[in-house]
Image (cartoon, rainbow, N blue to C red):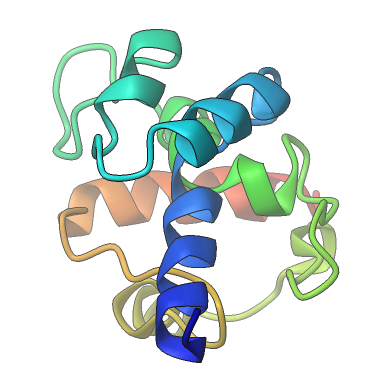
Length: 127
């Protein structure tokens, strides 16, 4: 398996795993590679990526971030940042979501409003 394939698989798994059911999703993602994210969405429905009625920063964070950064910002993956003391500006946060540094996936599907909700949720960890 090439390094690019491995990186792609790791990014895909990191994106689809969820804190509360990570082992089940990991198994589904591993066994059903090539099925897309639909297998994980059966267990954890994907929230809207744009702001709508009932959309919260917590729900967006739980879906997009918690598999690696934990439900309360404490990293679950060695290469993840600890978000409990995150003090960067929204511009930096937005850039991180756009570029996906290291093994972190990019999130182009999140609009500015959704990114702001997630940022506000992350900043609440430090208060």
